[in-house]
Image (cartoon, rainbow, N blue to C red; front, side):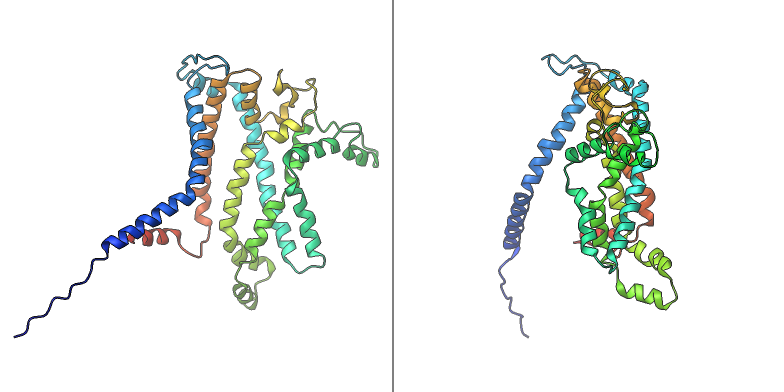
Length: 331
């Protein structure tokens, strides 16, 4: 009768634990600049704005009188809130679809082997690298009523000068300026178009699919995650439109809404963030302005969630993200 000898093996649990601990320290060390930046530049200002929204602070006095929910009740009852929000939503209707579709169409054109493709790519991307302030000043000169290039061009056809920067025309001038910088979206679309499986395109062509059907059933599903990503980014950026509206406005209050800083902006371009800016720096209503920001933050969050919920079902992923998450939890 033999007895199996017990073989002693050193435990590796301690070493594995130390390795994991070292890896965790390195991980948090690498992301610490992002964590500190998020904490100081995002979470703290948001929390402070939430606190200020319950006060009637004027931005200067040491005392911050408590107002409770009065600012939030005014947000939902003020006509300025709803009118500025409606103009912002109207801007979204014009800008977001045109940006997504325009970027994709130009990217499809630049993805083909056409003569001078590099030159076209460079020319289309140049507007995207121009700073927003400089771009606004350029377009302000173009749309200037008396000396602008736009009205000089119309004069060649006998059309009278259009006051692009005042009244309802200012809204369309702003839309044109915002659509001018499609270069970033085009670069993203170009990058994702080059990842589409060529074999699937060839198989679709062999099956008799024309260019449109190949795009509809092969290319579009393959790039749908990036299109959803772009839609959310453009939507959030358009909702926060402020600097172009302010800089594109003429330095006169003759055609404007109300006095102060907001008086420089035509009524058609008085968007939600312009109203927020006016509450802070024209009327010194920091509590009410903070309440506007908090409500707008929740609105953007809900709108983004709805977009992911509704359009996320039509997005095609080569790898199921839910399956990947399940595997990661098992580990």
